[in-house]
Length: 126
Image: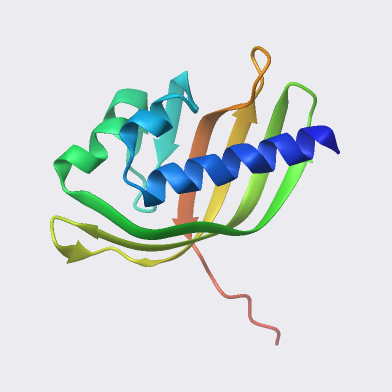
């Protein structure tokens, strides 16, 4: 239970950094080999991820809803729904997306190693 709380704290800190467009805050939360996959399939390394705000990305609201944590000891996987109000160079990029995050604990604290943002599809019950 303690690991789940610590991982959720990491996700909270990450979403606060994203919502605040705060690359410095995010810098402390990401592993050196971090990789982020966007909803269109692009892959950004750690440096590229941190540079997004200087290249016109603005998050106005950013939250992971319904996070579910699966603890594997030194690693954890979080799945949920990413709700964002975001623009890139003035163009609206807001939406709701599926999100999978991988957190690792290489030392005494959790860090974000990987994330994958995908298209959220509604499941039809026929």
